[in-house]
Image (cartoon, rainbow, N blue to C red; front, top):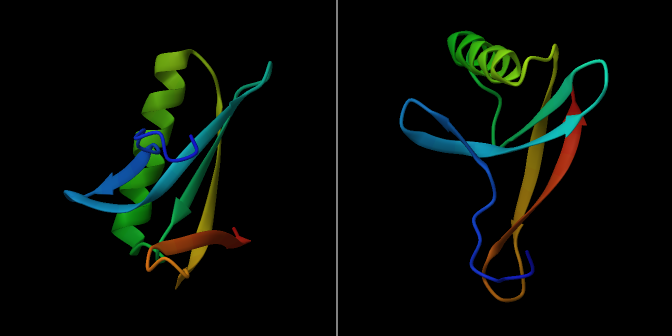
Length: 88
């Protein structure tokens, strides 16, 4: 939101922010993209997949889940800047 004080939708795993997420609603279902700061463990990936499936069920849609690893670096202003890297 251009620095207006809004938080991006965070991905929480075991009480920690591990990334951001976004969704795209389609007629056939919902695309859920998880933009993670690091690759989750197998159990973490299962928890995130289950949460995405529950969210899609709440919407009454079929989920299509995508994991992306974010790349980060410190910007000129000292803030961390992230961009999406390879997805799986």
